[in-house]
Structures are given as C-alpha cells and as structure tokens.
Length: 433
Ligand code: NAD
Image (tube, rainbow, N blue to C red):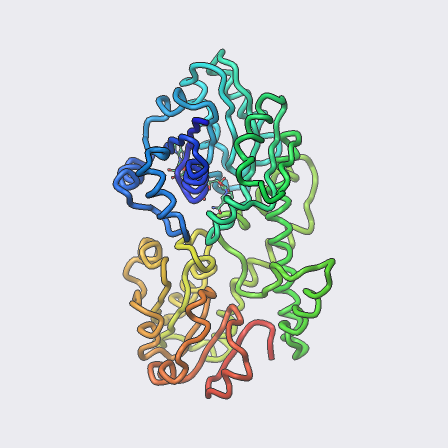
C-alpha cells in the first residue's frame, strides 16, 4: 500500500519505518525542515533501539522517503496517518490544534478516496472533530479511522512489529478492511486486531495509560507506607506480583512517572471527563501522588544534609524519563535537578543518551559528565534518577575512590541494600529499610 505519515517524531518515524519494512511505500512528512533534511541524509533525530538500521535499510530501498511537502504525500497515498503531537494544554486538556491543522491540510490536498487515520493520542470524540474539519475543506470521499498507538519508547520498534493487540476504530467496513490488511503482517502470531467504534478506540489508549500510571502511583504510595513502618517494598512487590490477578509489570516504585504520555494523558482524560460533568477521582489522586513522589528524593537529601546543600556537589545518574530513550519530556530528573540547583548545590550529571537534550534544558547550569564515573568525581553524593542497565553492576571500589564520601540516594532501587552497605556505602532507596 502507499502510505503517508504526518509527523515524524517518536511515533511517526517508527510507524513509517515499520510499515515500509513490510513492503509498503511510505512517505514521512514533517514541517520541521531540519529534521527532514537530516533524515534524507541518514541522520536519525531520536535515539530508539533498532530504529536507525530499519530507517537506513528502507530508505536505501526507496520504500521510505521523507518530505516537508504534505500535499504531494497525500496525493500519492491511499492511507494517511496523522501522528503529530497532542501536548497538554494549559487547562490539562489535550491540545488538538496540530491534529486538526494536519487534517484540514490533508483534506485540501486530496485527489480521491483516502483513509485518514488518527494515530495521535486524542480524547474521545476527536474522530468526529477530524471528520468535520475535513468536511469543511473537501468534497472528496474519505473515512476517518482511530488507531491508537501502544508502543513504548525504548522498545518502540519491537512493540510495533509485535503488538499485543491492534485497535481500530472505524465507522465503515471499507476503511476497517484496509486497516486490517495493513496490520496483518504484524499479527501473524495471533495478536488480535480489534475493530470497534471510534470513541471506544480513542478511550482504549487513555484507559491503558491511566491504568499503568495508576499502578505506578499505587506502588509509590505502598513504598511510602513501607518506609513509615520499616517494611521492604521489594518484598511486598514480589509477593503481590506472584498473584496472577495482579501480575508483575509496572509495580516498581521510584521517583514518579514522566515522559510525553502518562502525565499528559492522565490529565487529558480527567479534563475531558470533567467537561462531561464527571469527576475522575482515582486519576486525580494518581496525578497528585505523582507530583509528590517527584519530591521524595529531594526530601531525603534535605534530611541527610540538614537542608544544607549549598556548596555541595551532587552526581546524578540518569536524565531521560526512562532508560533506552533520549526523551526528557516531563522527566522527573528536571524538577529534581532544579530543586538541587535552587538549594545551591552543584550538579554533575550523566545520561548515556540524553546529554544533548539535557543541554537544551539546563544550558551551562550543570556539568555534563562524559561517563557515569566522571560524574562522581569530587561529589558529596550520588543520586540515581533513571535506571539504565549500565548503572546496575558498577565498580564499587572505583566509585568509592571518586566520591568524596560513599553516599548514594537511589530513586530506582537498582542496588541490593544489604550488599551495598557491605561495600561500605551509606545507602537510601525508595520504600526499603
Ligand atoms: P513528537 O513531538 O516526537 O512528534 C511530532 C512530530 O509532528 C514533530 O516532529 C512535529 O514537527 C510534527 N508536526 C506537528 N504538526 C505537524 C504538521 N501540521 N505537519 C507536519 N508535521 C507536524 O511526538 P510523539 O512522541 O511522536 O507523539 C505523537 C503522538 O503520538 C502524540 O499524540 C502522543 O501522545 C502519541 N503517542 C506517543 C507515544 C510515545 O511513546 N511517544 C506512544 C503512543 C502514542
């Protein structure tokens, strides 16, 4: 099939590359001319495991092309994915301006029947808004489909190639059949393609993210309660995870969830429910627990240093909102480092992939270490914010030599408390004695 993908970000580029990989001809469109120029020269604008190879191969074989010219891409394509950003508006709602602008531009460029697929995460009822926005611009026939994306950054290619399920919201069988055909190569192992109405499809994405965010906030509260009673959240986690009704995923306490999805999607569903006069009480609590959790590490630092962080040097391991990505949107590292700086501390930070992104946020207010060990040089303590695998088995003797004192605040519980104390460290983690 011939496909256009509008928006070449974390989702659009993966979607485009993966559809090209199954033999489709894909044109990726973005209004960011520098991004498109870079892609045409083989430069991948984001870090995502496996993506570079996929993009290079399909680009070389001419199944994957990049352009800033939306009309041309639309004219050449039968299926058009809209994968632009839906950032959080000031009142917490999803800002649909990019989706609707793209839909109008698609409509103006159409030269026959098109399936227009909303891939962006949007509130219930958006497909109707897209349909109306397009109708106002064209008399050509089209179908609007809602096809939420469930990939996770850090494993996006793998998730897209082997989805747990594909959700398709459609109002007519013609569009539903085209979408089912398009996804067939990815569901050969039996993952279901679920066809439903557009509103339900739109809600699937919010329900999934809201459920996962709820598990994280729930476990953060269990960790906070463990701390007050001297319990060990790891033991509690393992015990409840072995209950088949609960399962093991998303039960790790930490410094709060971040990223471009959970914070904005939780707030968007709360806001859209409120617009329908419904108070989404659980999610309001999930969000407020998360805000408090981002302050937990700073409170631990304050307690240890008696609020005297001025003049101290803190090493920070991990800046991205999670491992295996360079994305720092809503990353807990941002308020944590800002809190350190506000207290007068100096920060030496290291992240394997997010250094350039961090530079655009903190400029020259922090030191960007070249390696995890470089960050420790002369630091009064190490603070672990993101659980990159490479931090899990460090050379503890070397760490002790580099740090001014063997002191660790671990926001991700990556070390065993007993072992690390045997190594001579003073160690504080989340929800463990
Ligand atoms: P992103 O910011 O990385 O990418 C969006 C891209 O769209 C940018 O490159 C931007 O320049 C481009 N763009 C915006 N308006 C445009 C227009 N009118 N024409 C052409 N290009 C335009 O965003 P993302 O992380 O890829 O997210 C996109 C959507 O997918 C969001 O709704 C998000 O909630 C959803 N989503 C994201 C993830 C994720 O893990 N990032 C997962 C599932 C769903």
